[in-house]
Image (cartoon, rainbow over all chains, first blue to last red):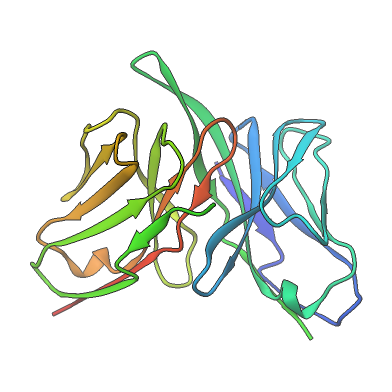
Length: 119
Length: 108
C-alpha cells in the first residue's frame, strides 16, 4: 500500500494563478481532509470529506475549493493564488476504529505534504 | 478554537523526562497525539477516549482528564529519536482541531 500520496511535492506560483493539489489514498478510507501548516499555527483544517460526493468547510476554507468524486481522490484547488496561501499543505485520510464499543474516528494518516510558495 | 499546548518548546538531554500539556476551552470527547519530525508528515501516536485513561507508545504515555478538559503527554527517559514537534488534536464527529504544537529537541 502506498498510503496517502500527494503531488506535487513543491510548487511555485505567481499571484493570481490557479492550480490543483492532488491527493490520493489506497486504504479505502471514508474520510479525507486538507490541512495547511504555517509556523507557530499548527495544522489548520481547510476542507474535509466524509465520503464520495460529500464535502464540508473547515477553519480556513476561503480561497480553496474541493470535490470528492471517488473514495480515493480528494483534490484541492486554489482559485486565484495569493501570497497568504504560501504554506505547507497536508492531505490526510482516516477511518473509524472500534474501541470498547466506542467508535474512534479521525485517526489521521498524512501524505508527505506539498510545499507551496506564492510570489 | 484551537487547543492550547504548553510549553511551546523544550530542550532535553538524552534520558531526561518531559511533560507536554494540551488544554481545550471546549468539552473533550477524545484527544489525539501526533509527532512530526522535521520535514516530514505528522504521525499518529495515540488516542485517548476516557477520562483519566492512560495510553502508551514506546516510553511515551498520556493521560486525559475530561473534567479539566486537559490531556498530558509524558516522555520518559527521552531518546534522540523523540525530537520533533508534538501536536494534540481534539474534536468530535469528523473534524479534528490541532493545537499549535510543542517543539521538542533531545540532545546528547
